[in-house]
Image 1 (cartoon, helix red, strand yellow):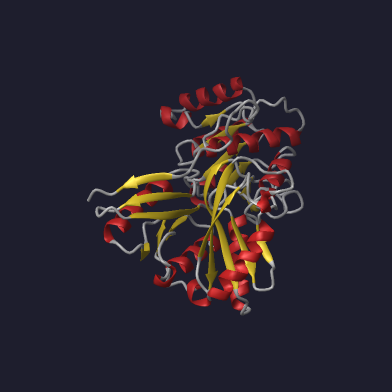
Image 2 (cartoon, one colour; image 1 turned 30 degrees about the horizontal axis):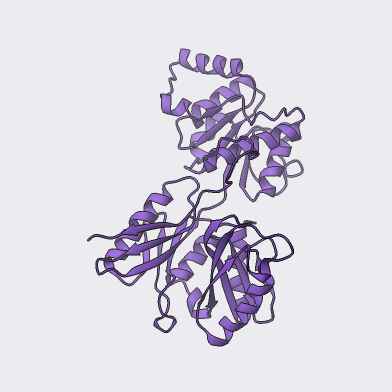
Length: 381
């Protein structure tokens, strides 16, 4: 289960049972921090929690802050200076600041008619969407919010038409990305007023589609499931593609001739071809390469992949250069993997690096792990 889904279910359960709760969200990070923008934590009136917003050092203080938010019934902005605040003690401090937004969540907030409720539904339904929240408005004026779905549906408002229009444009651009990041943006309105908007991005977990149910597909499916990815194994052989070998994943027992009718590949579907059967691999490539899949990993040496593409070309199937750019073969990162478990680890790591736009090299020697997420924008309309 993904972290956002856990948070959504925790909010739903707490509100349904009548408990008062606070949602704490990391909205801005400057410098080093254990968690990044978008990390969340739910705190109930009894001090129970779900989720993490740090490595464990900020949580006790945030639980105390949540008591104040519950008693006053209004949101709170809180900044922690990681190398100075007492709560970051224990010798774990590192230079930087973390800004949190703590807000009470009531039953009315979770109803599907409002932007927050639609956002919760989006997470539970494993869909993509972006929630915008004004951070620096006066507490007595209430929360201004807007939600944009991947289909372009807009719910709510940030309080000004030009602000809504600008936010919708940003949200649509982010939803085109494979791994968009949450961040806070500073808007300057024509009159000179500065408004901070937190852009809370949710995209569903990676969908991994494994073509082939051989022995080496088992550890890959297990790792995928552990990571919370939506995992599908496709193989026509019932003796191989069964629930005992692949528990907890979606299994499709079909021959390549039925792919077009029964298999759907989306723009966030990552594909690994590992049938260990030349003809099935060729037919699979014929199906997956023209799709919207951002990644097609092909097990085996480069020479085997070239032979398959040449055979398909002789049949009259020629792929556009853009399709071939998405092929990763040999598949996986170069970590010296030998066993099926090690190879599965290298494949999963490569998929993450492709999805996140990273090279997959060593972190050792790099000055920063994450890119800064705070930006300022001016509206000149």
